[in-house]
Length: 263
Image (tube, rainbow, N blue to C red):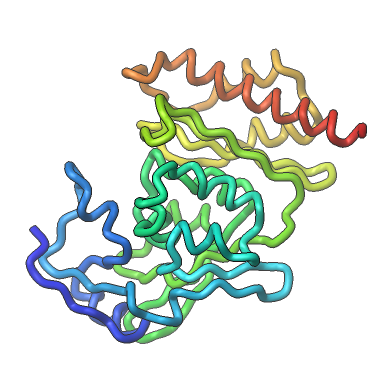
């Protein structure tokens, strides 16, 4: 049960307060969700911290503060179009006005709106510890380790990573997704990431390599069938169906890219 709320005035204060085991509160869409598994005796609000509510361009990267809402990011001229496509996977504008980019990353749910797209483009996070020291980690490494109580200060994404396309599958626009497929192509290189309900978000080296050399649908489906992850059969579909859908979706993305390049 969440019993105490402290409103932090700075990122360093928030990180210091949370070092004792408190949870961070931004938009609250996960903490206040019915059935949420996140419960803390003390919460530290970061919503009013100005330094975490900015979107900034720096070189060939865009830095998005943890307290930036989905809607604010959508309305920013600095946020790349490929990320806005993923932000719109959250169908409710009311929810987009509350939910924060940092919160969606920090929760790292297995039906995340953003995870697959961010992994595909090689995004990074900036973390802060209780002393105020910051550290940058690739998102894939952060997801594997998730240092305890470290404040996710910013999400860092490439401004122009190449061609990026993402496809989300859910029963309705506002339902939780059961599969997201994301592809990033830059020249001869490709990176494929998936988010699968019941599994989580991950980069597939096998599908990435196949996409880079322009593999066809049959091979991509076979590779999806062979992915070494425990895809569940559930109300959304069978394991085999989801694997097939991932392979076919990637094939269509590659075909569309080939047609665009031929024009």
